Image 1: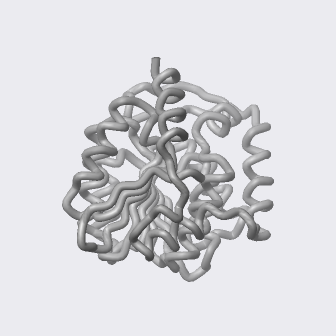
Image 2: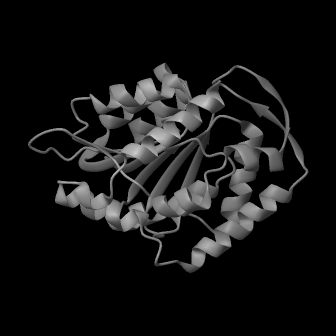
Length: 257
């Protein structure tokens, strides 16, 4: 049923989505136009994708704790890489977003094997990327990947987000960018957003992944759009972007990418 829902939402998006030129807010229009264009590739893209390819071939088995579902068990690394990693397209969009915003303080909820984290971190060595991961053994693989690419500006915090998110936020200055890709349920997603939004500077952007993963996640996204600090919200199908800079009115967009 979830897969059918996802497919339905995809076709609805394609029918209703417009081009980035339809965005009235000039700052948001510039940002979206910048991140969805693919005419410029960076050397680091191929390096990160080479690492992804290795993860996709790994037959190693690890024990995974899932705090969201409460289910634990053994999984192959290649299975995690196939099912949990963000696509190269989305990783590179986030890289361009960091670059466009010149984001210096970045928070990620949901490290997984660290591929997206590397895209967030490799724009500038002077940025600070804090990433949270629930599973101990997945976190260990991510740490190895960070060391391999000499990503010394990443700080990984392992544990249940219920504990690690408040602790991480307490140690941070104002955030420039946050990427939420954690528990795919409505209540936790809203809780993460509500904690993070109060720690953001007024020009920050919050990105929520898998907003149409299920009816619950779509429900969470709709409530986030209605938040008093969410001035402009943009759907790039399964990625939801919230721009916090105050405007004259709320704006909602579905954009093709």
